[in-house]
Length: 133
Picture (cartoon, rainbow, N blue to C red):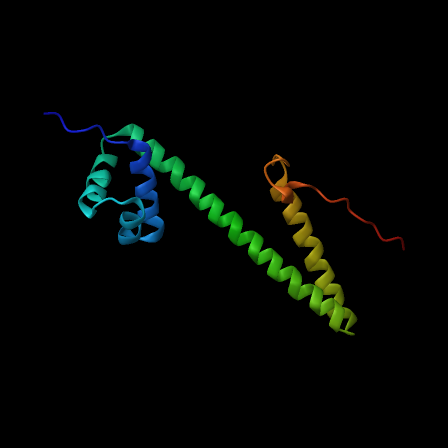
């Protein structure tokens, strides 16, 4: 009797999770054995469809994680800089914080270029307010 056909989409998800969270966690969450995970890894060497799915899933997972980390870090930085601006009488420190906030705003805008606003509320570009001298 022939072996059952492997579900490459599931195998790719299991492999990516194993890379990101470890073998035991991936096996538990996907309800597969360690031996099955080993077979999936062996199949990566010769199954081009599985290899391609694995690469796509891994790229997506890493990009999602990177974007989440960046957003969290930018939010924390903005909060700290806002506190510095509100609590400091040191004009030099306030000016430096303002410059840093402006650079963060530009970075966020640049990263959101090309994003579909329907996919993410953060993709909405806010108008730039200019100070009159």
